[in-house]
Image (cartoon, rainbow, N blue to C red; front, side, top):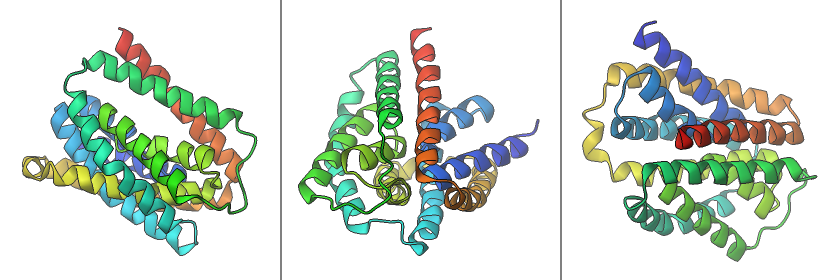
Length: 248
């Protein structure tokens, strides 16, 4: 199968996940770029940031039009995590890759279990305390900095479980958090973007953007509780695969 077809297929899946679930883009994009398209780990991470940033912006606009983005909370959440994410990134260089992968899997699994056990998908808007949002954002930033991911797959459980946000608002707000985090991370890798294979990255981005719109339409047709459970099951699957990879 040609690289172009693989890039289009992988991009569509990444976009669908981001548009419908508000996260999971980097978790899906990086393995696809490495194992399907032959990118190096460094190149895959940089390319993933480009893909996830552009796709998240597209999906964010769609969700914002429907009023499902909590701008103040999202910006506070994202801003609070930038510093801890940088510190976590510095710490990550001293941790063995297998340990990082296992830690990633454990955190993802715990987040999934929390969402599956939650009996509310908060269908009404609840007030969010700025201090609590900042603390949650800082904690998420530290975790994502150490584990080297954009954080969308963890932001949704945090926004729902910690801040009591309804699922559809959490999906939209998570896209804002992903955009800010990805732009911050991408700014540190601007020098490596020019070496990317844009003949592959370009079609990947295009398919992801189109997939994000389809994901947005899917999220409008499915209940918040169902989305929450689907997201949790995706997290469990990712956690299981990564834990196996770390142990082998």
